Length: 107
Image 1 (cartoon, rainbow, N blue to C red):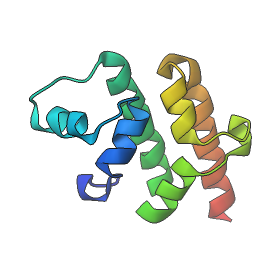
Image 2 (cartoon, rainbow, N blue to C red; image 1 turned 180 degrees about the vertical axis):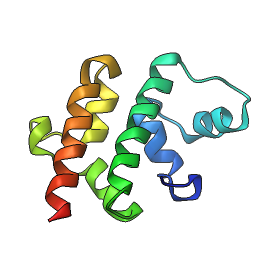
Image 3 (cartoon, one colour; image 1 turned 90 degrees about the horizontal axis):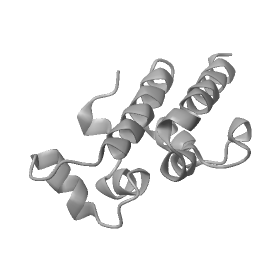
C-alpha cells in the first residue's frame, strides 16, 4: 500500500474534493475542519484505486493514471470522474478501470 508521503499534492486532493483552495485540504489534514462526507468518499475511492495500482506500479505511474485519459472511463481522467460524480455512481467504474490498467501493466 502507498504511504502518506507518496500521496498526491494538496492541490490534487483539493481538485478531487471539488474545493478551489489547498488551505481546505490542510485544514482537513490538521483536523481544523471536517470535509463533507461526499468528499471523504471520493478520497477513499481514489485511495482504494491507488492502492490497487500500487500492487504493481510506483507512485509516479499512479499519479499519471489518475490524471491521464482513460478509455474505460470514456476518455475522461479518473480524477475528473471522481470530482464530477457521486462516488456511489462511479466507484465500480473507477475500480474496474484500475483493475484493467493493472492487468495490462502486469504483462
